[in-house]
Amino acid sequence: MSQRVAAVVVTYNRLEKLKTVLAKLRAQTTPPEWIVLVDNASTDGTKEFLAAQDDPALDITRLEENTGGAGGFATGMKRAYELGADYFWLMDDDCYPEPESLEHLVDGHTAAMAAMPGGVPFACSLVYFDHNELAEMNIAAPDWKWARLWVQGQRAFLVQTCSFVSALYTRETVERIGLPLREYFIWFDDAAYARMASVGIGPGVCVLDSKVMHDTPSNISGDFSKVDDQTVWKFAYGARNEASYHLHHESLLSYVRFFARVQILMRRGRVPWRLRRRITGRLLAAIRFNPQPERVVPAATA
Image 1 (spheres, rainbow, N blue to C red):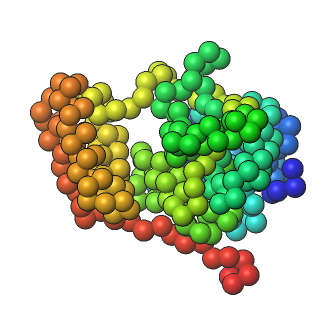
Image 2: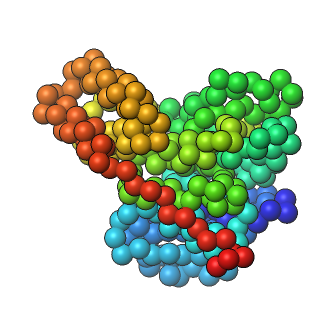
């Protein structure tokens, strides 16, 4: 693998899980050249632990405030770009890759590129919750022509979106579309970035032999029928962000369809009216919420 890979990890108050992630990255059959770690102002001893690390591959950025996953990944990808990475391997601080995950991911992307004349803007791993079950929240959305590579003998299928739980983006993609929308803070920043990357190019690819485990407390997908007092703050970000993307990057009709779908799901889930009003307010806030991606400056013109 001749390409220079930067693993970009965003962490916030998950020190014990972060230790596992770092061990898994260092145990790769083809380790990344850099581990670009963004600490989102953790208060659980992460700062002190990282300060004691003696690893020349570990590049640490400590933020003074929590910028969410979106802000963390934008910061980390910008740093990885400055270091000269050809590939950006994105993951949360509770994503545990198998030893050959990166090798399979890069090889799978390379094979897909050879078969897809328009290019392949990103690749992602197959994400497990445990050894026998996929992680519901990280199942990549298949493209309508998902089997195009499969019928050619590749263990991969085409996807429209993926999460930032083992996603691989190319330097060319970052130069073309910029960084993730840091203003999203949390939720839908990863799906929006994948969709932006696919515009004018085509779908990405899920590489089935590249496997990671997502260490989450429960295995449920987040849909708006499940809004409750504990999760409403996350759904509020999700409602605003996804509605904004549909309206400002797709069409008014796409926005209206999403608005209606959210209302139907909340009604089916019997979400309390006070929570429905909060989510609806966020859907309406999306009309004026239209962040633009920060652009990177190619080295030749920097």
